[in-house]
Image 1 (cartoon, one colour):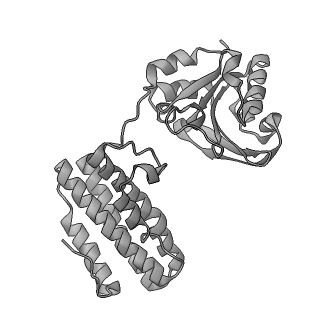
Image 2: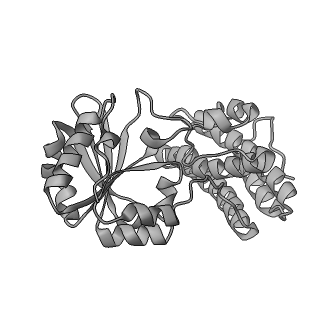
Image 3: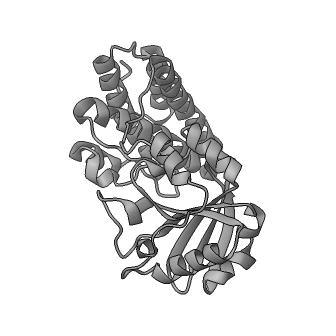
Length: 296
């Protein structure tokens, strides 16, 4: 079943690319479904001039559609690479012309059906999706398994304890790297690994405080995070030097500790006070500068 032609018309930067895909699907049996996801289908925080085009392609020939050759059927490819994505599929990400950013998740029909039934596809479709082409009635399956709702990431007490201990462990790990002079390793831990853990705690804090829609991977954090958190984050990122890393590590520890303690209180979790005290004591011992962090 092919969808109505109007679904790919209209004035937008990607109309030509979507049109070429639709016409290919009509003429060729291997392309079974084309689904638009992401900002182009969202009512809340819709696409703007900086948005990319996110598509799911369901095809009998996933290896062909992952090749650069097939992507060149859609226009002049300037940049292109592939990477793993959800549900065991692969994604080709390309820049067409000067700045048309196309992300194309490629599934076989079997992979896509499994991703729908197991809820994996719903993770990228629950904010909105639109079938541009559908030869195998996948739209009916999507209507059955994709819930058009946003559910915040719930955290169990076991997951909470593991996350908090992971964070404090890597406080000490990063501090040791700084003492050894491994600046790159220390900075990547402070500004990448620890920030990913901090983001998860920020999400939990906002869910507890206001039930906020926290998106994923920090998307639109500037809109949903409390002003106090955004202000404290200014000090949590480091320049590439020892002093900058040390100060960012202290600030990250302080913000995380405050949020983690609050979340534990509100959710009735036991707060890992020994883990915090261990990390604070170690950091104070080597980098205390008159403003020692609280160990309780």
